[in-house]
Length: 112
Image (tube, rainbow, N blue to C red):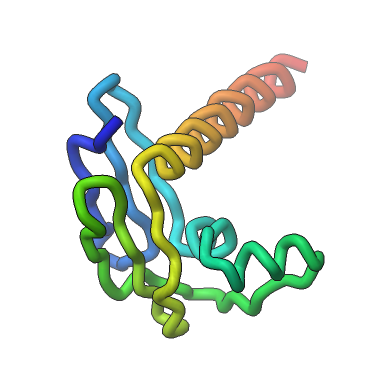
């Protein structure tokens, strides 16, 4: 599924992705950097070593990769990750589900 729109927020701290099925998700630069699919990033996760990420991380540039993905350039210089539409949809779905769960949790405990 190809996104209908990808917008970089004014402060460049996140992208907003709209999907043909009506879903819309905000993915932060920090999340995208942490979940990068580059070989180095995957190796760091396998080895349980975190790659350094900085507060205030932003997205400097969004590059098209054919018709199937984007490449993101981050303010820390990292530019090796390719984010296929299917992976962005998966991350979007996770964000949406976290948001729904957070709202349900807040409602449940505000009634207590």
